[in-house]
Image (cartoon, rainbow, N blue to C red):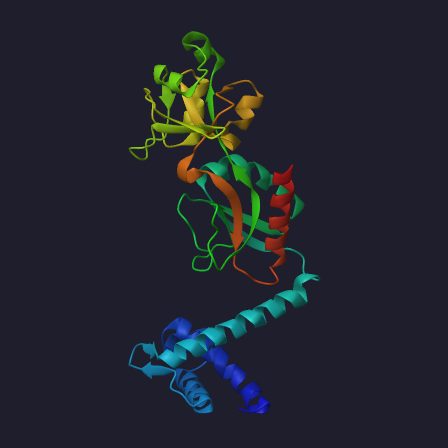
Length: 304
């Protein structure tokens, strides 16, 4: 194929990618504002130019051939590159505007992100934010999400990302509770206390604490079990026991003296809810201004 032939085939390649995404000629034609017969002719023309069958046709759907799947991947890359070119062209001139959808774990979204959003909205009057509280893993390549916050030490392949910090866990109780029940000085002494824990799995009451290579596992018990960090913090404030909490949830209450930290010289294992905080997004070379300014803002504020 000559360079001239290649340039002439580019529009047909773009149409082919749309056909595969849509699943049939009719829907692709509707999206393109064209006719199914016109779209079909473009695909036939591309097959002739490439010398291979790309799709097997039926009355309602198409089936992509093996060679068609390979060609589709390159056509999709071509469209992504074109989108990046458009983004790059308008990146400096365009003002940040539009909606950014952010998904984050519920406790992190409520305690850390939500307090930061009002100031961001005041800074960028043309940018809207939709904050999705979600404790399930979200794939921004599949779902309609711009940014995903995930607690992990192994961010998934195929996504770009920045770290926002790390999550550590602490044990907290009210001063009144400790005055009446005593202050535990070693992990084993937690056995004599009411403890507030998640209760999501049968292992959640087995608290693991580490210090200088030493590990202690304590099967705690208590009168109140809650799988919401805010509820455990509130119960600790009211004197119902010692709660295990992400540090970012307990920080303000610790600063205000509403609770005090217990066994501060031990590191508490938070299980699946511990690790680095990653801000993840599709790997575009040039991000839309609305997304870029939110990323920069979150990094700036959380660094403080």
